[in-house]
Length: 515
Image (cartoon, rainbow, N blue to C red; front, side, top):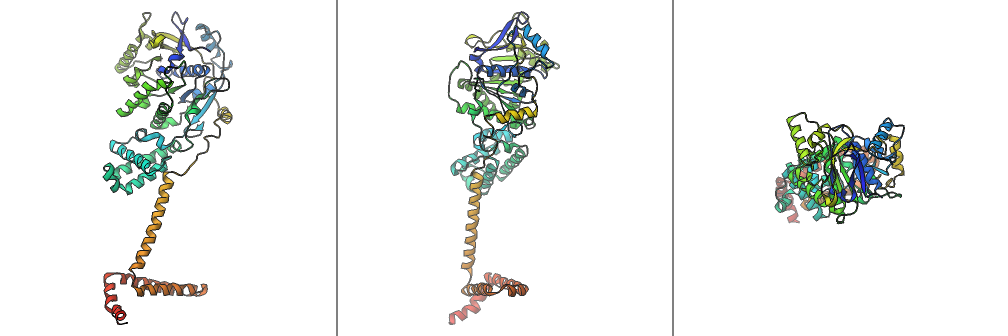
């Protein structure tokens, strides 16, 4: 098995191979370029290379094109001749079509196996980012998570969190003394945000069974790494949900995987498409979290590759950690575009054979400016590279083909049915029902205690006489009973009042004393 992935031909009119060394693949990477310049094909050939090397891959399919990884390419494809010609130009003598083992996933459960996590696993930081909460509202959410821990209330789905927020609002006076001000306005704002998230389909994300990370890190019987494809075309309609979910997944990998140092090849490669969505309007604490994860997760054997239109979309501190780079063409129509182009060129190790800035501007579709880590992790000299053709199908597969793959998948049936076990919602509902019963009993007991002995006798006599009345009698005297009942209630109500008590003490009280 090769210890590198062939990217394409470079230098001397593409005669030299440009390869990504597997031992440095966990040092992260970048695939950048304007729309239509070939980023998707580059992502596809990298996924093929990692899978063939036995490395599992996770990627998001924003346009639906990457589903073709599941099927072999064909010599009947309209680009077959072009592929063969390109393979010959770059010296790829063993070029052949082939498919990858693929598992399809979908947050909404339509185009893949459902993906779920729990509210607790998401945590208050990422959930606040997802809901776009203010600082005060984020504080309330942190209180909710603390209360859930202390009260033993599992937060599994959205209704658990919603019911807990209602409970916090009802007990805000007591909680404010301990945690600081808990305002109903902030609670109401969070509830509205949760409702919006629910309407966008976000409730599909939260629940059980939750995704096991081990199911993303599998190989098939032949030793090929599993290519996990997240259907993201519909998910892109809620970009904040998309970015938060992928960041959660990255954070979970960081938290759960053990340290492995510098392995001979990665344990998993994670491709983050449309990466600019992760950083748009992101608070500094979140950007710092991403930077920390990117810096440390390489020691867990995970490589992260960001795909975006412009390297300027990635914060500088994170961009500096991306050692393997494939830069497709950038368009420079404005002064800002030209500045970004110049900055992108300056991040590469210069090649005396050509001007890097001009090359980034001029490379055609299927070409790129590349730089891969060399011995001891040193960035390689920038090269102008012709990207190799894919072995799998270029373009999407049909719905019937997708369904057939899902049916044969080892994941079939494991996540398809949601499980709703006892959690915060059910526990709080049971507490509320118990409290209502106790309050009703206490109220009834209080009414009895406030009655005079004569009232108790009268009520007892009414209950006794009422039990002796037959169905026919009751039917005939319904109006009379209703009138009598109303009069009795009026008298009792009056007797309960201050004036009534005076009358009882003044008239009836004298009679009882005389007895």
